[in-house]
Amino acid sequence: MPHFTYQALSSNGQTVQGALEASTRREAYRELQSLRLSPLDVRETSTTATSSSPPTTRPVRLNRPTLIFFTSELADLLEAGLPVQQALTVMAEKQQHPGIRQVSARTRLYLQDGATLSASFRQASPSFDDLYTSLVAAGEASGSLAGVLQRMASSLSQLHELQKRFTQAMVYPAFMIGACTLLMAVFALVLVPQLTGLLAKTGQSLPAVARGLLSVSHFATTHFWTILATTTAAAGLFRGLLATTAGRAWWDRAKLNIPLIGPIVDARFHATFTQALGNLITNGVPLLSALHLLVRGTANQFFRSRLHQAIDSVAAGETLSLSLHRAGGFQSQLTDIISIGEQTGQLARSLQKASSRYDKELDRRIQRLTSLVSPVIIVFLAVVVTIIAYCIVASIFSAISGIRAKSG
Image 1 (cartoon, rainbow, N blue to C red):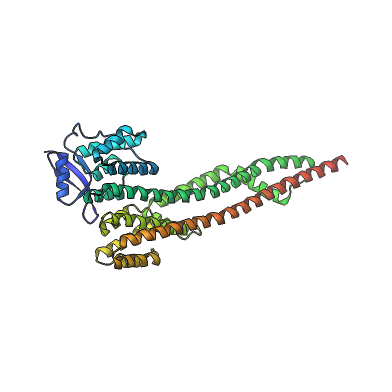
Image 2: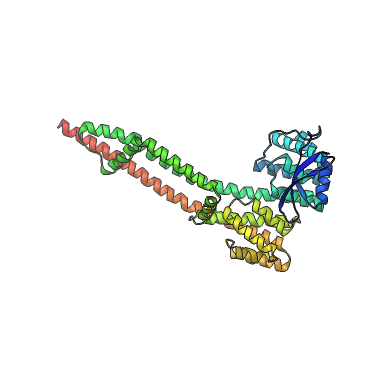
């Protein structure tokens, strides 16, 4: 009898791995479901896959906009009354995006092999993470898959907008800093040496500011390889530090204390956390399982450690609001909102309201950052341009004075 290895979610949200024997892959899925496990990945180990199984090829990844479009399209087809397999067939044959066609075809083949839709998504592409597949599993169990997919598409769109707004807010400051650095480099490495040669012929000396820039230019050109090696080594050490658990935790905590940037990181986490948790609970995922899934989806090690502490408290029987308050790192405003939701029995609704509030707060903080950073950079750039212009004009006048002195 064939042997299968599996990875699945238990009823409390924990990831479990193991092996079992079954006559077919479909029977393996049924056995896991009878054990109250939600299969994430099932692979046959003792024999080759059947002809109906998807071929083992390079995994197909969907970027965030494509994943949103895929989810929305599938939800629309299901709401129109098409069965899941037929909807996937339509997407595999009619969609123009090659990634969507491949993922749809692979998901359909896994479904035909007996997997649930959530497990099929997980095996078809790594783009479907734990949160995504858990929500799909909740939709399958409740019979409201189309509605779950529509809410998920909306949630993914909101998160994508958060990330896009943050990135766009950083583009202009980064461009201005780069332009300012390039201007200073051109002046120090090109213009100042030429002016020095010109003034040397006339017997005049450079202005004090220009001499200072020339010293920087001379040091940079003389020790260029040393500076490059030192910078590269420092960047490598920093990346190595971030690769360690302790180093990553330190950096994630330190980011929260950076002026202007820290409040944005904090507001972004709270907006994502409340939106994702509210979405999970709305779709029937138990609170403890939802928190376990959020831990996997949280990149910030500081908040992840606090979530682990909160999970332990919730598992011990405490309320979510008290658990988050004792864990620390969560705003008291959030714990108060969650406490009200727990008392009224409308936790998901309270979380969605909190998500909307943090979304607006994130917008305000991003606008504040751009409104403060842009003038500072413009003033700095104006100062640099003024210094460069002064050096050039003063050097030209010095050269003219030297020429007149010689001619006189």
